[in-house]
Every structure is written in structure tokens, then in C-alpha cells.
Amino acid sequence: MNRRYRKTIIAGNWKMNKTASDTRAFAEELKPLLSKAKWCDIVLCVPFVNIPAAIKAFKDTRVAIGAQNLHFEDHGAFTGEVSAAMLKDLGVKYVIIGHSERRQYWNETDLTVNKKVHAAIDAGLYPIVCVGESLEQRELGVTMELINLQVKTALAGVPAEKMRHVVIAYEPLWAIGTGKTATSEQANEVNEEIRAIIRRLYGARVARSVTVQYGGSMNAKNAEELLAQPDVDGGLIGGAALKAADFTAIINAANQE
Ligand code: 13P
Image 1 (spheres, helix red, strand yellow):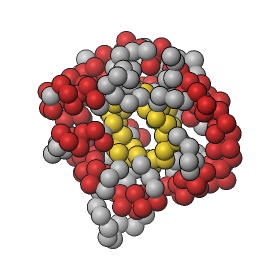
Image 2 (cartoon, protein in one colour):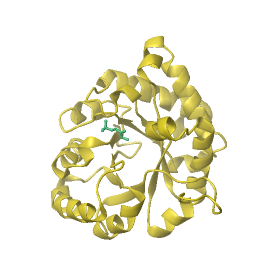
Image 3 (tube, rainbow, N blue to C red):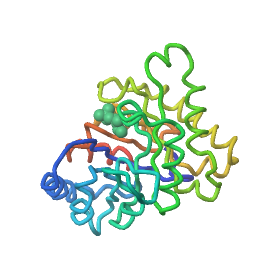
Image 4 (cartoon, rainbow, N blue to C red):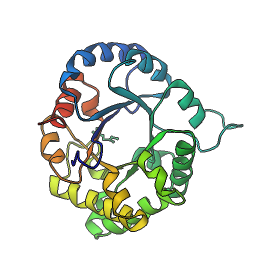
């Protein structure tokens, strides 16, 4: 991380876990533990139906609430979908876009990711755009080409002045939910490339201000080493964000003097 130029953001992605009652209980457990969180922003991306409970439970704290998806259209006949305006109206600040699970199970593509990024920005939400390669792609040596394609397509048409709303999360598929974390060197190498892509698109000033997270089996034990890397500006955390103590340990790792 580099706190001089950009925000460190520790974000939990609860995926399809916890009820609204669980959310309230988690908030009561987490809130007293946050005293050391001085420098990083904290986000919890909860299931849609838990958003009102989460907003209420974390009111007047440092924890911002995020969603895990949105639809790119403003409104209309899209049964089961949720728009950016609906999220904004509830008080949501962040929204995860293009998570690999959505790409894998719901056929999201780089092009729909791009539409969702625009929908989020237009509504005043902060997109957390997920990119990352599979194990096969890494072994074939095409990781950087893939990351270039994903990042450039996701950001197509996004003007430079809106880039301060955009967060990118590098999440290698082989590290998600597997307990197999990227080494800090692997994480930093790809995050550095993501910043280089942003530099080529928008120039050095924008590039150094964008938060680029790492996600994939980040936990209480490995967070400090990952966050010590210059281009790892936080984490997008799945499993370890479901337990208040583990999530706090990661937050504390981001708040070392
Ligand atoms: P895990 O931390 O459980 O590996 O999940 C990472 C992730 O997908 C966060 O979006």
C-alpha cells in the first residue's frame, strides 16, 4: 500500500452468506473492535436483502456498505434484478462488479462489466471491478494479456475525472476460496501491471491515485505481507470477512504505523 497517494480499502465480500439477523449480530461484534482502524476505509459487501440492516447497524461508523452486483439498466422489465439507483437510494456506497463467480455462473462478460461500471458511476456509486486469471491461463503465460483486456474493457469510456470513484480488485481464480493465496510477489506484479494499464490510459497522476486491491484467500495470517507490497492497496476478502475477529486482524494489518 501507499497511503500517500491513495486510499487503502479493506472490503469484505460476504457472497451468499448471513441473514439480516446475522448481519446485526456481526455488527455488534465488529464495532467495538475497530478502534485501530485509522487509515483504511472499511467496506462490507453484503447480500442485497441484508443491505438495509447493514446500513442501519453500521450507521455512524467507519464501515461503508457495498452490494455484490447490479443491473446496468436504469429500470424496466428485468425480473429479479436490482438497479444502481435502488442501491444508491438505500445508502450503498460501493458495488462489486464482474466478480469471477458472476462471470463463471451468470455469464458476465467484459462487455457487461463495462456497462455495469458506467451504471454504477452514473448513479454515484464506487465500483470495485474484479479481474483475474484462471490457473490454466496463468500456466499458459497469458495472465498479463488477459488482465489488459479485462481492465481496458471494463474502463472503456470512463473519463479520467471519474477514475477516483473506481477501485480495481485483482482476484486470481485459483486463489479464491481455495486457501491458496498468491505470493506477495505475484499479487504485486499483477497489481503493478494494472496500475501501468491505468497509466497508459489516463496518465501517471490518475494511475497513482487508484486503489488496486488483492483478493483470494487473504486472511489474518497473510494480510500483513500482502499489504506491505507497494501496489497492494487493500483486500477484497471472502471467507475471512465472515468472522469479526479475522476481519479485524486484516483491518489492523492495514493500519500499521
Ligand atoms: P476468499 O477470501 O474466500 O478466497 O474469497 C475471495 C473473494 O472472492 C472475494 O471477492
